[in-house]
Length: 303
Ligand code: RIB
Image (cartoon, rainbow, N blue to C red; front, side):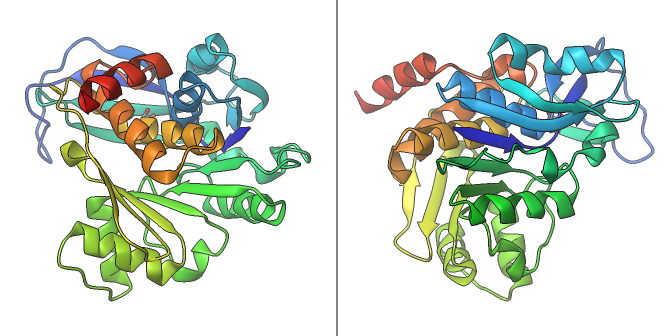
């Protein structure tokens, strides 16, 4: 089973011709509302890929909470460890430009009140996977990692939104997910050099003693386990409509594959396809593919 400890948001989205510069006002489309939040997104993506998933998090006592949880409920994600804490559900104000790129302003609300102790005591009785991101309290995130690792679970951390962390912070992490820019920033912080993103991923994985996976946009993803040989997977070519949630989709589908016993390369291959498909529709959660949709594109890629 996969346990996701993380954020739950309602996304308020407007489309613009070009993202505004500092001090500039631009016209946007009518506001659209979508369930979002990196934790909730990862949980839904893993569930749509066929995994049993529990989400641990917090929403506020407001009208946004029901909307934020609606897709997760419909997909039968276990929400028994989602608690009401405080008045306001997390909200993300998102602008998306014509190329599908976005900017996000996050108002965390209840997300900052969620605690590691909400995770059921028997959550990792038979191992399993814990998924973490950086949109809830850092202290609670790493407390959850400690508890999961001590119980024999594997811990996947998406370092999003990016934060420069000390090397010691990764002692309970099994898999670190970053994009290529974040990989380079983190490596730079540790004084590690690399000729290209594959070298950087390999050096970072060796330095931290974890598996590092870096998404490389339209070029797929690259990984190294503890500094070992680099694994590369491609991404199908798509016309991006909205890239919101693509990284979360990659993370959720990767975890679903690993939970089902797939090897790293095959789980990454499925995750890269799912991440690309998530860019082809508006909004985060409505764009996440099912396992069958990923299979179909994978079959086309290999034929
Ligand atoms: O990664 C995309 C997500 O980031 C959005 O759904 C938004 O809620 C923000 O958390």
